[in-house]
Every structure is written in structure tokens, then in C-alpha cells.
Length: 305
Ligand SMILES: CC/C=C\C/C=C\C/C=C\CCC/C=C/C(=O)SCCNC(=O)CCNC(=O)[C@H](O)C(C)(C)COP(=O)(O)OP(=O)(O)OC[C@H]1O[C@@H](n2cnc3c(N)ncnc32)[C@H](O)[C@@H]1OP(=O)(O)O
Image 1 (tube, helix red, strand yellow):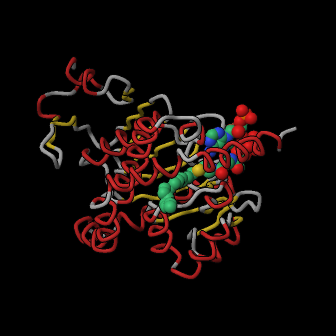
Image 2: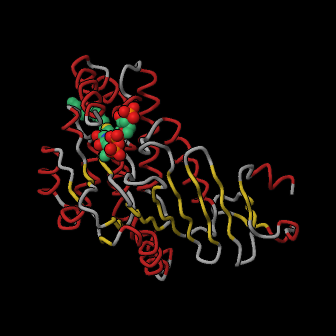
Image 3: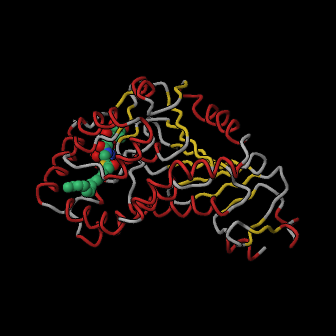
């Protein structure tokens, strides 16, 4: 029991812990020992920015992002996110993940602009490696990943959703999704572009990236950026329904197929990872780019007044 609490310090188990015995341990794909519970048990763990609720009956974990006010992707958030996905990846009971937001109106506002504004090269490099890591973990996951997009999802938020296998969005024309980097005076990196091209094709990506298009929910469905629109209150239940279809496919066949589709894109970043970090750092620390970010942040804040 003490070992279990050391391994999962923030985990609240709704099952009966006292009944765990040595028999209750299973080996993960990487050879790590993980606790194994009877089928009816659920586990919820909460970190600073995420809640992970694992249902052992279905093998599906719901990962809820909760970093007020807008789930922007800070260095700390990204680090926590990647660790959580890695943990689920190693848990052989977990076959699928539903990613959603616990905040109203926003799925994720994308990269935290304050991590890129007024920061030195070392910080920018560390931040960018964390952005890469989040994408590598999610896009390369062996698990089934469904984005339950229950609010707006610009830029890095859109990347997160596109890195999943299937996207369900709330049918609210006020919510938008897209890679709007050019509107900030910055450029979507090649692997953001590749992910979008793999999702909606070359021409739609060319238009979307140059114009920094943020598609409202109906347009997002029309261009194929999301796969389904459902009433806002039904986003999570629709994600559960959708994932059951994916769970019916034998894991090994689905995983090999997913890897066949995504590996070339992942390998491209892996083989240029340091160069991509250097590009980002030299681009984002330019005075002209810093000025663009400042103007964009000021406009965001002015919208309120
Ligand atoms: C040669 C070069 C070749 C290659 C290039 C090399 C490298 C690439 C270089 C750069 C790549 C960078 C890629 C960047 C990706 C990104 O993700 S950038 C982030 C883009 N995000 C946005 O544009 C979203 C902006 N936010 C919004 O539109 C809205 O906030 C919202 C629709 C998400 C939510 O709207 P509301 O509910 O109305 O909330 P508010 O607007 O009032 O916001 C509340 C609060 O939060 C602050 N905020 C919002 N978004 C961010 C953010 N992304 N980061 C940090 N902070 C954010 C906002 O200012 C408000 O703050 P306060 O006023 O309350 O202090």
C-alpha cells in the first residue's frame, strides 16, 4: 500500500485499496509494475492543470484541462500534460483517451503567449522543446485519442485537437478553431502545417495558414477540421459513443495502421528537432516579432474594455 501511494501520490481510488495484494500487479508494455484493479473500479487523479479519470471497465481515460482563464499552454502545463499522457500510455489497461476542457467556452487558447514574450533564448528553447514533446506524445500515441472540443481552440489548441484521432466539436457558431499564427505576425512551424495537411489536405491548409483562418464550428466541419458537431451538452457523451466504435477494432491492427499514417510526419520532426528549436528561438526573439506579440496581447486585452 505504501508503495502504491508513492507511485500515485495524488490518486484517489474509488475502489477498495485494502484488497490489493501482490496478485493485483500487472506489468506494463515497458516492463513497469502497475497496480491492477477489479473491472468495476475507477481512478481519478488531479494535478495542477489536469484531471485524469480512468474507467477500468472501458479502458478509457478522460483528461480534462483546467488552467483558468483559457487553458493556455504554459511550460508547466505542457510538462504536466506530457507526463500524464506518458503515464496513461504505460498503463496497459488504458486503451483510449478523451481530451476535453473543464473551462467554459474555451478548449485551449493555444500556446501561452507570455512564455514567448520578453523571455530569453534559454527559456524559449525549453518552452519549445515542451511544445514539441506534447505533440510527439499525442500525435504518436498508441492509444485511441478523441478530442471533445467544447469551446474555442485557436493555434496550439487546434494543434492538440488535430493530434487526436477524431474530433467532436460543440455546435456553437461562436466557437472557432484553426491555426491563426499569421494573425499574430508569427509563422506556424512545419510540423503544425504537416499535421493540418494530414487532416484537411493541401489546398485547405494553404488557405487556412496564410489567412490565419479561425473556422467557426459549422465551417470547421465543412473543411474536415472536425469530424462531428453535436449540441454543447452532448460533447462528452458523443465522445464516449465515438470511442466505443474505435475500441471495437483490435488494438494491434489499429496501432500499426495509425503508425503507418503518422510515422513519416513524426520522424520529420524527430530528425530536425534541435534545428526546429534553434529556428524558433531565433525567430521569436527578433525585435519585430516581439513587437507583433506585444501588439496582439494589447489588442486581446482591449477587446474587454
Ligand atoms: C522563418 C520562420 C520559419 C519558421 C518559424 C519558426 C518558428 C515558429 C515560430 C513561432 C510559432 C509559434 C506558434 C504559436 C502557436 C500559438 O498557439 S500562439 C497563441 C495563439 N492563441 C490565440 O491567438 C488565442 C488568443 N485568445 C483568444 O482569442 C481568446 O482569449 C479566447 C477565444 C481563447 C477566449 O476568449 P475569452 O473567453 O473572451 O477570454 P479573453 O480573451 O478575455 O482572455 C482571458 C485572459 O486570457 C489571456 N489570454 C488569452 N489567450 C492567451 C494566450 N494564448 N496566452 C496567454 N494569455 C492569453 C487574455 O489576454 C486575458 O487576460 P487578462 O486580460 O484577463 O489578463
